[in-house]
Length: 311
Image 1 (cartoon, rainbow, N blue to C red):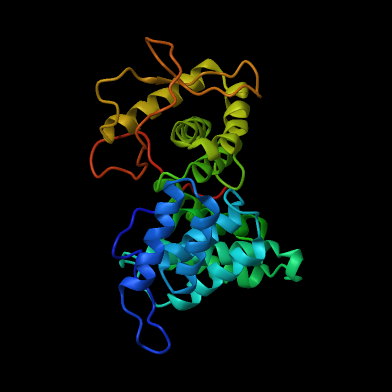
Image 2: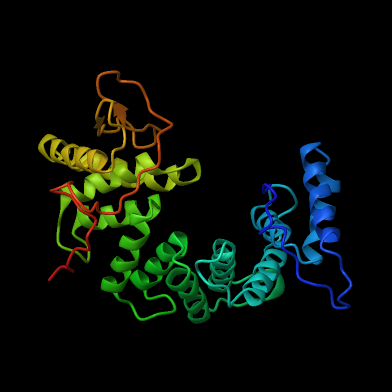
């Protein structure tokens, strides 16, 4: 549930023009209070009412709840409806505006539903329109998730002409914003030399960085890339990748007083483990997020600069 802010409590005026600013916000506040008190059914009813009254925070929350199915039964059709309306209502919001991140999410999720289709309302997949809306989120609002999704569309030629060069550019943009799936996919491409020049050291380092940077929902996606690369890597490649990792951390002043990270080969590809701290051997599950943007100075020897496509 969102923390109330003036931005998220912004509500569209009523058709009659006599809606006082506090009315929809009070409904939203009551919804928040109900959720806090574990009155989930009451909270959702109030939240949806606030959404109908135009409170952006409520509209986003309701859309997410229908999309995830964690508070109410999953309903892709209703989630699509909410996200589509938000995208339509706020399409002209500047990317520097405080609302931009929510508009970007609305465009991305609308695109995702168009990409996959929704059987319950006979919405057929429309990858061309999906790519157009995904580009809106990725290109105008610079959302890292949308940049990654657009990259996958260019990699497969889904709704757009297949173009690995453009796909890699979007992957790099997303990876620089610390999006672990983009880091893992780009790292895997470098590791295997697929559509790019073979660069196993950089690829392994980037995959390891992705695992270190992944949240709980992303780890399951990243782990197979990590298990595959570490399973194939020789000791020299691992050592060089570790050096590349330390260069990144040092340049970005992350973990300045802590021991360096070591890339561990997984004894079992299905075992959920992460890199260990050298010197302690303890598993590390919480660590500050890492910004992978190339630093202005220092950090020689490793960069996320785009690789040239393989000849």
